[in-house]
Image (cartoon, rainbow, N blue to C red):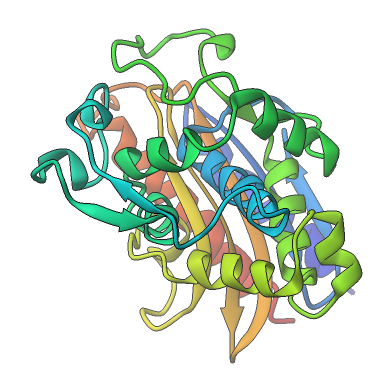
Amino acid sequence: MNTMTTSSKAADRLNAICDAQSFITRYCVRNLLTGETFGRGADEETPSASTRKTSIMMAALKAVGEGRLDLDEKIVYEQRLAEEVASGIFRYLTPGIVISLRDAITGMMVLSDNVCTKMVFERLTLEEVDLYCKSIGMSGTHHRFLIPPLALSPDHALGAVTTTTAADQVMLLQAILDAQTSGEAAAKLGCSTELCQYALQTLKNQVLRYGIHSRLPFETKVASKGGRGKRGRMDAGIVYRDGAPFYIIAAYTDQVPQAMPDGTPGYTVSLETIGRLSRACWDEFQS
C-alpha cells in the first residue's frame, strides 16, 4: 500500500522539476487546504528582484494608515524618474503626467513599473521599508537599494541587490490573506483590514501571466508579484481555485545562464520551471 502523503508526493515532484535544471531553484509552498508547508532552500537568501515590491506596498500602506501618506496625493511624473529604469511604460511617456499615489502603487505592482516604484519609494525611506520587513518577521529580507543599478553583471554578489527568502514571501502573502477578515492579523502588518483588502486586490490585478500563471487554466485568479533579475527570474503569489485560496507559492531561480546548452535563453527555462512548480501544486494538492 502506498503510504506517501500528499505533501511528500508533491515535494518529490517539485524537487524533480528543480533537479532537471542546472541552475538553482529555491521555493516555498503552502497547501491552504491542509496548512502543510514545505520547500527547497526556502530560508536561503536570494535576489528578490521585483517581488520586493509587495513589502514596499505594505510599508506604504502602513504609512497611509498612520496618516503620513495619502493615497490621493498627486504626483508629477518628472523626467528624472525615468533614469536607470528598465521596466514599465512610464519611461516611454511624456513627463508632466499627474497620477495619485494609489495609481503609482498600482503601476508598481500590476506592471512592475519602476518609475511608479520610485514615486512610491521616495515617499518612504530605505531604512523604513527594511525595518518594516524585520518588524513583521521577514528576517531574511534586506532592502538595499531604491532601484538596483542597470549595469549589474549576471554574477553580482547578493549584497549588490535587495534580497529575500521564499519563506519570507510566503509568510507575507499568508499575513495579507489572513488580514482580509481579521483585524488582529491586519494590525500585525501595521494596517487596517480595509488597506489589506486593497493590497490583496492590487495583487490580484496582476496582468503579467508568466511564471506561476503560465500552466494554470487561463481564468485562474492569482494574487502575485513576479520579478526579473540579472541572476534569474522569480514569482510569489496566492493561487485561487473555485473562488477560494488554494495554495501559496514563492519560487526563485538563481545562477541562471544567459543561454542553455541547446541555445534556449536561460530566462525562458527559468520561467517555465516556475510554471511547472505551480502546476505540480495545482495537480498534487487535489487529493
